[in-house]
Image (cartoon, rainbow, N blue to C red):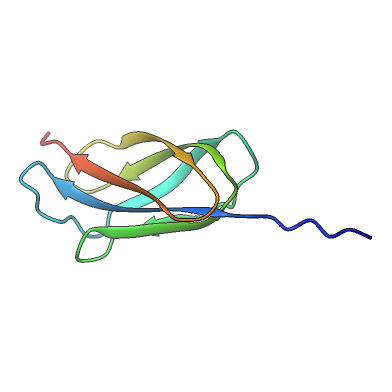
Length: 93
């Protein structure tokens, strides 16, 4: 029997405001994807950093929800291997 090895990707990023200040406690989650995905979310840390792991390669739409702005939608293409890096910038209300 042949065993298939699945290669995963991940998304790493940071959340900031327009002035470049890190934003903590922003929820980042997968809104939609073109393949099955885990029902996971990440909360940005004090430095604004977040990470979503164990993702199959493909197209994802993320949503980021923070206390200072309306939710943001971000389209991301994930490949197997090294993390896909993104930046999330919240504009003022």
